[in-house]
Image 1 (cartoon, rainbow, N blue to C red):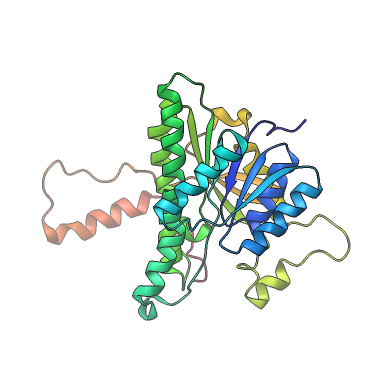
Image 2 (image 1 turned 180 degrees about the vertical axis):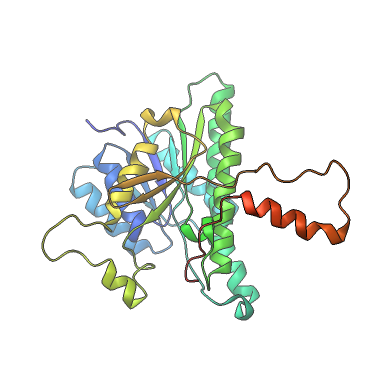
Length: 294
């Protein structure tokens, strides 16, 4: 018996990296998994692994940047397994450029895969769950989004990626606030793990390499997948609207933007005086974390 017995979960971008790890760990805990990836051969390999280990999984090649295609993924999960209880929005890409060199195509492609992709699948899942709720059926829907340190504090050379990931964090807060009435939770995971994307830089590949001495593999993607799997379970109903950092054996809450006391004149500021007011307000504010790469 696993913590996700009787759960049905869609994992996007699950043909490799974190998505594949999520799919395998979910299945090992009893979930039926729809393994979504536009690379059908990669997705099939993950499905084969899951089935050979005694789990349940099917391949789906829907393009999560297209709304209608995303709906087909949700429909397939329901038709194949009889229900849908969770969506793990994991699919991603990057087109790294310094802002001054960033093209419109670079911007659009990253925003489409990350931010629109998170919307499309979740939108169709929520329509299903809301309908079930209105019918009087118990709903235990789970949305697990994927943000990044780049989105929470910025990252040099990744303006498009950082903007998309920041948007995902904000989207998560809205989903949690709006969807609880239907029995749906929404959380975002902020992972640090060894993937094809993170190890593309030689220095990162060396830092994240599997330990040769057999010690704890701090950067194994499965470390993050344990958190994702729990968030997809029935047991996680009390947790929603959180951005959760997961790296190695560490789990933490990302403490987001908060309003401060500020400086209140009780009247309109003259433009020339705004600088002094901001200096005073900034002097008492907690400094933001340093932008990655700066």
